[in-house]
Amino acid sequence: MKFKDMCIEPTIQKALDMLGYEQPTLVQENVIPCIQKQQNVIVRAKTGSGKTAAYAIPILHTVVWEENKPQCLVLVPTRELAMQIKDNFTKIGLYKRIKVVTLVGKQPYHFQEQDLRQKTHVVVGTPGRVWEHIQRGTLDVSHLQYFVLDEVDEMLHIGFLPTVESILSNISSSCCKTMFSATISSEIQELAKTYMQDANMIEIQKEGEVPSNIEHGIYHVQEQEKKDLLMKLLVKERPMAAILFVRTQENVEDLYMYLEEFDLSVCKLHGGMLQEERIENIKAFRKGKKRFLVASDVAARGIDIMDISHVINYDFPLEVESYIHRMGRTGRKEKKGTVISFVTRQDKIRKERVEIYIGEALPQEDKKLLQQVEVLEEALQSLRRLFLEKEKEEYVDKDILMLYINSGKKKKTRPQDFVGALCEIEGVCAEDIGTIQIQDYHSYVQILNGKGQKVCNALQKVKGKKVKVEVAKDHCA
Ligand code: AMP
Image (cartoon, rainbow, N blue to C red; front, side, top):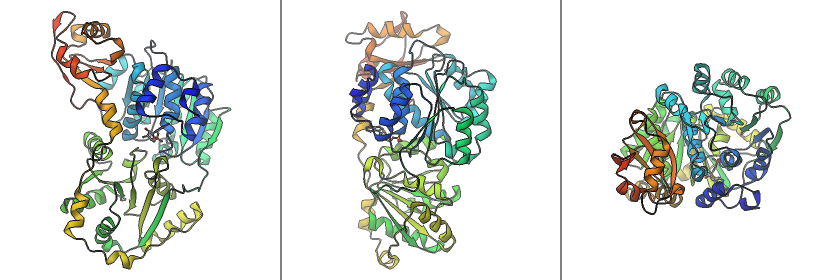
């Protein structure tokens, strides 16, 4: 089957072509028709299966551009996942000029409220902040047509159940509801029974089923020899890109500093870091500017990074679900992946639980062979090397440019004023204009089809008044 056979509206189809999505993945093949028919669905699927596009495509297909109030609300457990989903929606909805707003903690309410006062099609947020906006009356849920709960298992694990229920009880029963989770616990089933009557159940991956493209291996180690063995392991494996999972924020900092001392291409991610730094690091890792990411579980949950060759459980996960989630970071889109775990005496029972769950023993690697590996300068050099940025991302980024223009609400500038001024430029038409975000003193205007730089050079006046135009820094296109 191809997307072209799924009757997807032309602007969305054009974006799928641009992104290089030709065929729907298994989860998309199953979920898209259900959402197109406004059916409630519960989906068991892991990240990496294409689940975000499975709901973003049919939702964006039906969203009415002219409607100002949010039509879709997506709840996710973490801020990073919210950013990633916003990015997915923005790219797929690019030619439909879809406006997506993220509502996450540790960011000022003021800007979020300002965003919500403008036309907003899709809201993506974490439960706490979304609930606060509903209570303050700044998020209007009365026009919602779609409600998505993504990574529900993780959301409940963090303790968001009461907040999720409060939000759900404010949402119309006629709203189409979709739930995604890697595991379906009895708590999740209860939630679905209460709020999602007659939901279809779609299971993409059976519980315990381990994808055949992922290889597993374990080393029995003592805590104090982990660092030394890790260096040898990296030299032996030469991962293209690896996430090194550790248990606590302190351990992230400690291991990060250790690898930095060897001058390796490494970055870090944990919940105690500033939001900007976390986003920067994810970007750097995703684009291949950094080769290793030292991360804690919560911070790395659900993050979609293609081409991770290795997941290294430097600290063995405390729970089976965590092993499954960590494993899901590699072997995406049927590529080969490797999961290597260090197992201490204290981890023995945890390792056995994982083995029971996946129905097979985790292959034991020979520690003696690893101990013999020599960490030579020449081998380290190759681990320091950076990667070229991913072609696809470059393609998309080249095509779209976000411009900053120093004209906003205080000058009574409206979207049509920008459209008018831009269409006056030779060779630019409405089709080349993406989202327009008007703030008090300035605005952000997305220019498509590779015409950004040209517009940046040519645009001088809006509403007949001189304006300053520059490429927006740190503002995601
Ligand atoms: P997700 O499971 O939503 O985290 O998606 C995993 C990755 O698959 C993302 O990088 C998507 O861009 C990519 N992807 C999703 N759907 C398709 C598709 N139909 N064809 C190719 N890539 C896809």
